[in-house]
Amino acid sequence: MRSAGYTIKNFYRCPLVYMRGVSEVVVNVLLLAITVAASTLLFSIFFNVYTQQQSRLVVEGAGDVCVARVFDVGNVSGVARFYIYNRGNVACIFDKAYIYSGSAVAGPWSVSSCRVAPQSVSLCDSSAPYRVGVVYRLTGPRGEVAEVSWPGP
Image (tube, rainbow, N blue to C red; front, side, top):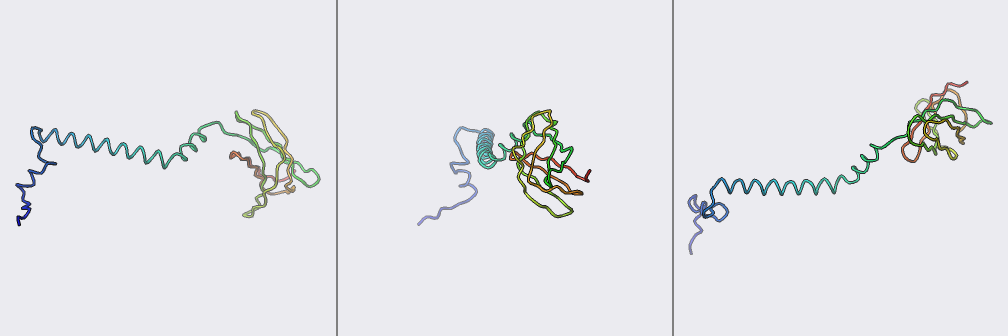
């Protein structure tokens, strides 16, 4: 039986290292190019698969947003009515109302068909009770938020 006889001399005769007629510099440049191409491919596959959802969120966040302000809260038989001004360029839609009092949060209460056109004022009825000294927050299905700290009339 012959031993494999791995020595330094035999290592340099390995087909991966020793190539006939090709210089050492060319082989190193070729291996570097293959490594860069493979890592670029893996990098693009990884980030395309794992950040697709994040990419959609970035695109949605870059679009126009609702910029609304609640400037008055009316008392209609013990129920809050909100007067909202939309300063943005897109329509605002609100469907829920919350009441913040200190660290306590009450709600959500429904807000009936509250759509505020761009650069306009609208009134929105809700089922939230009218209270003094609280913070009202209106939210919408697309992330709209409008808030008012209501000290009372």
